Image 1: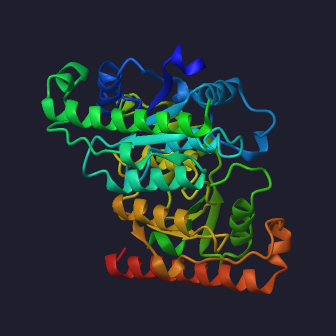
Image 2: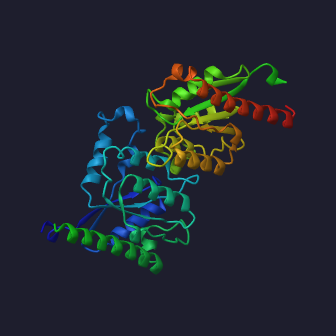
Length: 187
Length: 187
């Protein structure tokens, strides 16, 4: 009955390192809207990971081990990523490359929210990569949040009824999925 | 008539940082097979580029400026990249992200050779990204080189008639394209 005393831990990952990133703001807004049973925490240091090199497997830098631990400790992962040149931001994909072999994403519930209806290549490519890593992609929680501009910060997003409703739907779907897993495993 | 006195400069980029990378070996074999009119030079330090952050545009680290200069100085680019988790290696895509805004790839003749017939997702995604960057993708020079194993080094590749023939076809197509551009611009 451990779950009766702690919320689900949801690690959030913004695919952009910009200080004023819409994707980061979206995850901050989601954290503010999350029900008490979901604890959303943004993991920022993935941008410090070095370039993935298979020769380093078994001798990974400390940043890589830190990222893997953060993923292992999470009950779920929520991603919001921009699209760069028709693809997933390379640096963000590089972070994922570091955890293909170490398997933290296997069966991990993961959802991706998309801050732009135009970023369809990156969203499709990201979900394909996550599926290939055997993540438990929670399709019902993957939403496109149509932002009227890319100038909105967290506060402006929380004042927009449409954005709030879409984020609540995504969070509700993710929460329902985590509860269903808990019931099915009897933990 | 500058071209009468110097070969075309072809910058080669291996998408893998592994010391024993098949993709790197393929580019080394290509360099050995290239006609005198094509000078192939491998650019290794892209792996040292930091994570792309749009906030750094205008204040780019020295490694980024070095990469941009190398691209600007090249008449063409030849890429050989592996596939990681159904995508372009993130670190390699990160290098490309650094040159979307600075435009070194615009109208640059680029070809990609693929060391595995199974790496179809990454090859398609890479060509899509290059096309989106308005590179001059030389389709006739993009080849899949079917390697019998991933254990071949440059010497073993140069001893394989099939690999040699495919690389020669790619180089010939790239050379023909560069000559046709030279004729059409009258330089």
